[in-house]
Image (cartoon, rainbow, N blue to C red; front, side, top):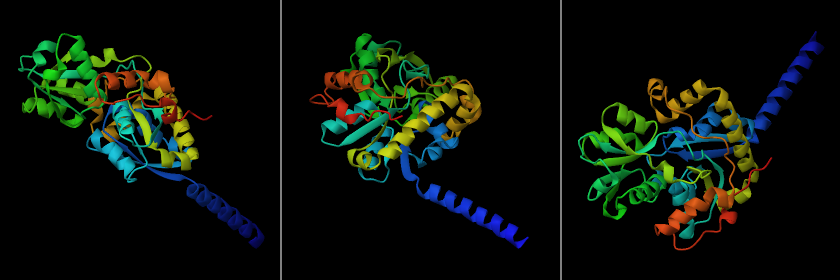
Length: 315
């Protein structure tokens, strides 16, 4: 009997030691994000244990706006962030050493992303935006630059608008209080603002984006990337596993969005899932459009070496 009990004890000790060793072998990663439904693959990878399964212990930390994401990465208060492509290109153009290794989602995307105007603003077309105050979540970010491009291509003059920063969760409140005349926003905040009567959609400017272009990128520093290749490969695998899971588990996906955006599930009930068909990056196919628009709008002074910036997926 004692021999049997000693055997059980030894087996339990071995199992415990194996679990502890496996847990210690995981890489700790703090990931900065902004509250937006298109980042659902990241949320689900965390909630369903796909990051842990692939050797990465990820802590998600909410940032109030996109402007603090790169600051967090560069200061090493976080290892990974989810900035938009134009912000990344500007940072690299200014001498920062960054790498990108996966997309959060790609275009075309059915997620609502629109220019929303106040219900009594008098704005009915792009030309009416001249002299108006327009809120964007980050100056020089994706929503800002594509909104400007849409305005210019639809009879307006983006150079005559007064651009200010408005964080995404304040979309409806900023319109209702007349802090701004219009806001560039994405779901769930865009749909919520319209449904609440705070504003109406002037146009969906995502039509100007080339298919296959990513909305945001998992980004880190060159130094961290070179010293943590296995962690990056693990996160890449986890995101693809999350994308596959989301395709067949929309309920769990919406629950994850609710948790990390702090919005109630009923608000998210009719939110479409983002385009997760390909989260892998190709230097020119994924970032070529963003580099072109950044050069056109004077955000960068010279082309960025995209091949150096992109870390390919590893099997």
